[in-house]
Image 1 (spheres, rainbow, N blue to C red):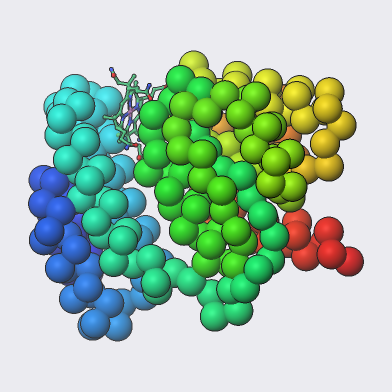
Image 2: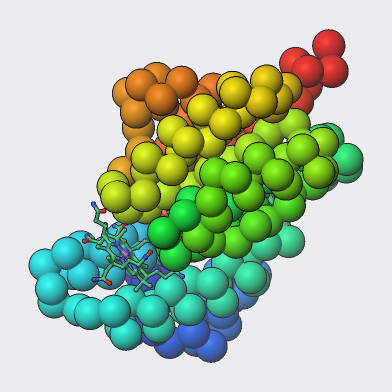
Length: 212
Ligand code: B1M
């Protein structure tokens, strides 16, 4: 769709204000918020990621594209909420230690909140100890860890080990581009999900099961 391509291209150029305006226009034209997210914003960021890998663009360009992505997501946020979103449980969320990528984590936050789950967002560069401390302090139901670097994924294993050694009654969900189901099984985490919307669906069903 032309509008979605236009948004994707503006995002790649880091034109944050224009991305926000066009996202609103797309919503006004009746395009579904989830379609705008996947086919315009995530698609654009994916292209930036490919160019970054091939060294066709560098950190500054990626950062301004990321800022444009966030502006677009801000506009979409109210449209990504479920109508029955009220007090469903509590999740601790963060990007693991050594890792500063937060776009995916922020999307997970929006989607979880959209399902009525209270989210305690610890930000980026979060150690396993901090995840555990905050889960205990807040009596959380789920710990959600995001990682974008292969070098930071092992911190997720430390989260699992600490939860087990402290015998905490909390589920661990992991995700992020380099993470997969095999890694989840290998480290003994409870759930792996591929994208933010599935993370929220799974979190909701974990909480519903816990109440049964
Ligand atoms: Co970085 N970076 N980066 N980067 N960066 C990657 C991840 C990389 C794959 C690029 C590449 O080489 N192709 C590569 C990692 C290679 C590897 O480990 N195998 C990389 C690298 C190397 C680096 C640096 C080391 C570069 C350098 O400095 N030389 C450096 C590391 C800094 C650090 O963290 N210590 C670095 C820095 C940066 C920026 C700061 C410039 C910027 C981050 C800005 C920010 O986040 N505020 C950045 C970006 C933007 C990227 C790419 C281009 C895009 C990531 C992104 O936001 N995607 C990325 C390339 C790529 O992934 N293709 C890349 C959009 C986002 C929505 O997707 O986060 O995957 P994602 O989230 C998805 C799913 O994964 C899932 O939901 C989302 C979709 O709905 N998900 C979850 C995420 N978390 C989840 C948790 C869940 C469930 C699902 O449950 C709890």
